[in-house]
Image 1 (cartoon, rainbow, N blue to C red):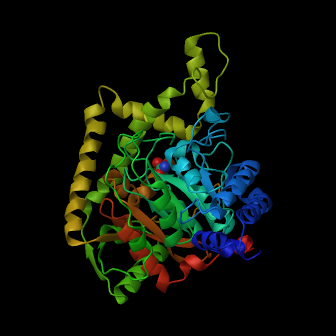
Image 2: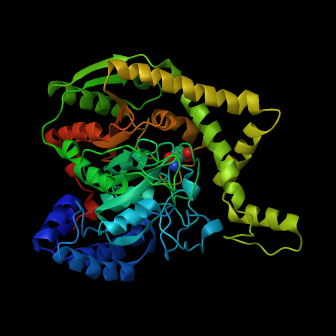
Length: 488
Ligand code: GLN
């Protein structure tokens, strides 16, 4: 029993199907761990032990009756708190939605239920997914399981910490500008930001609709791929959902690694990057090249525009998406005697500082006098970046890049918004171009905190990225190490 959390989600499901483990005992084990360990991590906003166990018994019956054919049947999962769960609080870590209980499931959540995965709880995050450390959460920051004085990253810090500390075998996160890949790197787990449109955004509380994606976090590429195979697919309720995407799960998890041409952007290794990360990324490139991959560098000067374009576009969309929180229809409501003061008080008290900063920035770049100078220019820069990447992918199959220029900051380090924003330079490009990207553990810093590398591919090349990521994990063991405090 005690070694159970060390097993991969895929392995757990196999043992459940064989009858060697019951869904209930697996679920109870994780609930017990979450109760014991989450006090010091704060990875969860909400735990749902009763519904998880009731679901476990129902799922057990379906598995015993051979009614469920799913790679993760019976495996419990945690879900980021910006994905709607019917009957369960969905707060976005914001006072604005602190009491919000959705009457419906997000598409990805519905898929979890259909595939027999009990939901353990909702994970802590930056408020409305805006941030890089979960310190903008109205419930307080998530702590890094490798060192509780450090941040777990953000915005999906709760999901990444859950998987790293084995409070849930796998987790759903969201990535608008790096929010799956960066916390996955800080916590030493594997995370996929899918192609825009590969997973429906129905029921995902919107931050920046043209960039938002729902993705997966697991301890290795196989678990991430298995969860992705469950949540991807067309959904007519999301008009940006891809119609003809078929994910080749067998190729993704095959032990035979396809040969790939891998390119590294030169600019990513010469800018403001910590020497430890640079050497870990180059070491990952060396390992891949020694194992049959062609590796070369290329020049990518347009990456200079990425952060500005991302913050202008994402804030513009956020200002529009967050306009719905007016204290009238749902969410937090401040008592007032006039309509103006109702709006002002509700929004002043309901949103935290970072959400307000994005709303102000978004309104500014969309305003009449500045629209052309900022928003329109940012959309042009986005297109230039996408075009350049198209060219890059005629020469290479995969881009190998750092995830973040530095290792996990200390909690309370008080980084300025400008410092935090510029550090998103390696992750936002995949969102601007709608490309899939897989973050993998690739080393540790001098303090024993994990470091990550990302593989970025062509649109809908998830199976190829997983195949390469799995190949990397077959010959390395960074993903197998676990944090001391989290040991079973
Ligand atoms: N750091 C990025 C931001 O604050 C990440 C956002 C995300 O991917 N949700 O906007």
